[in-house]
Length: 143
Image 1 (cartoon, rainbow, N blue to C red):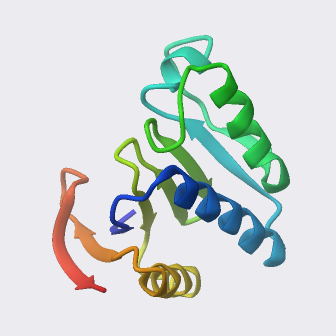
Image 2: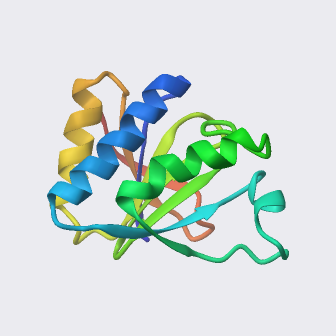
């Protein structure tokens, strides 16, 4: 993924609103499943081995799954990483309480939609070209 869009810091309610919105958006666009990965730190206890593998899940089951994992007290949305992976597009609900989208430059429809949404919600999105070390490099746009 060559580019990244990220929001400002969001509270837990905002994160859940966006998670629900992402689920509904893709279901409405006839995409019914994705891959997820519970990253640092809840991934350390969620997975039976040290390897964190993609888990295919129906979008309609995603929020329930996150709630179930949170009830075990091994992690929490906004405090731990949750990756939602689709072809050429990846959302990361970050441990810093923001949301990232990783994508290749060719994926414009979904990217522009979410950038505009987040701008209208005052989430202060910014877009970056990632550098070779996979960290933000050159900022392309901000709000």
